[in-house]
Amino acid sequence: MAFITYVLLAGMTLGIQKRFSPEVLGLCASTALVWVVLEVLALLLGVYLATVRSDLSTFHLLAYSGYKYVGMILSVLTGLLFGSDGYYVALAWTSSALMYFIVRSLRTAALGPDSMGAPAPRQRFQLYLTLGAAAFQPLIIYWLTFHLVR
Image (cartoon, rainbow, N blue to C red):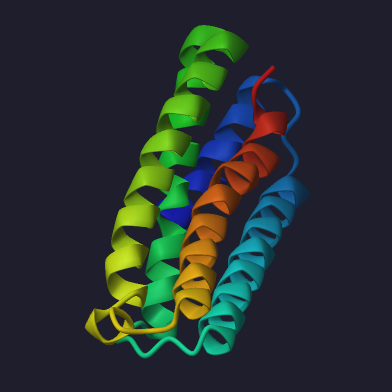
């Protein structure tokens, strides 16, 4: 739902700025979809390489990667109301909140109870995987929304 809302909000934003064309909606949706697929594939590869035994499925990772759209929507709406300064403040706030949520959620899900006695390099790699997934979120949010706010 947030994905579709983001695409429609991008169309509305570009329409307000007199830069709308129907092709932009398709380009916006396909770009966002490609980034989600790449992110989920990277997370699946990282989980596989870290040999994590957890209950995380592809759909769980897809759900975690979909949380960024809420932050994107809030950032773009704030940018519409308060200009680029409001956009950057909202971007910083939503990005930090999302990073905190991703680290807390993925750490407990990926570093399950069987990793407590795991060797230190494996635990470190799992922690880096979690931190990398969290650090990647603000970059994607910025990349998909910076052109919408002037």
